[in-house]
Length: 348
Image (cartoon, rainbow, N blue to C red; front, side, top):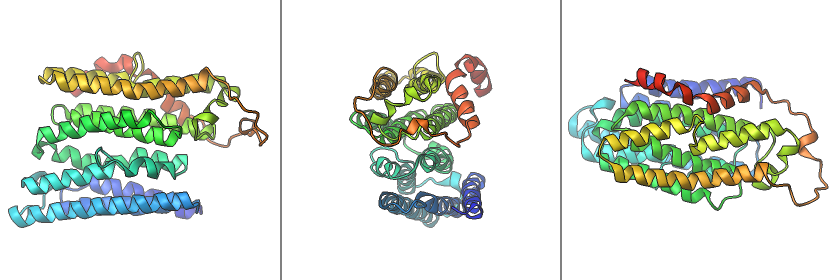
């Protein structure tokens, strides 16, 4: 892609998200979401592969539907109550339609079906943008809407997402689909705690972004998109394989890695709020996700590829990818648990 065009598209992505962050009026927020969607579409379709074009079309249709629902919710609220302000969305019909639209935007279950299919059709870097940056603007709106939404609705969205994210990833062989289901499960953790402790939602979102970035950048560096290919990476870089296994375990939420911190604090807060049953279901759903992360670790570190491949061996070609972003995100994804007391102090 032409570097000037790429610069304009990436700037538009930043502009759209910033516009939504800064807006207090529904029309401005909607405009930011639309700029965001339109900026990523050429990045998704840039390889002109039928699967990429299909993924782009699916993404466009779902995002356009969600944007139309947001517009409908905000105009309904303005018609019935006379308020365009984001914090004054108080009519039950408007709030329900708006949270359904934003759930569709970020891929929460039960409106998650587009997410694995779209991610599967994209290259890894565009998939990384879709899994991380594209979640920020809708999440900013969800955080602002949370006080007006029925707590039971948010809890059900969160529980459904963690369970669907765990079950959906069990039977996959494509790494991008596994990361899509991982994303759905993590979104569920963030939503379930949103009304009780919004700062924990932001903490979970931050750690999720770093861990997912480390996973995607590793797969990009080793040109890996299937579990079968993953079994060949140990011969290219044993150290990278070791750190990647730890990043995957961090995504699963195992101590003493960074990913344990948000899960631990969220379960603790749910117990404090008198929701032990919700906390138990969330912890059991985390075990489902942990299983497929362990499956990836097992394939990467403890198995050898069974076939002799006659094609050019991918691990012999020198990669031109910058390794500094990978090193930074991996370090953050593995080593932040000791600063939990400091984070708790800042949150309180």
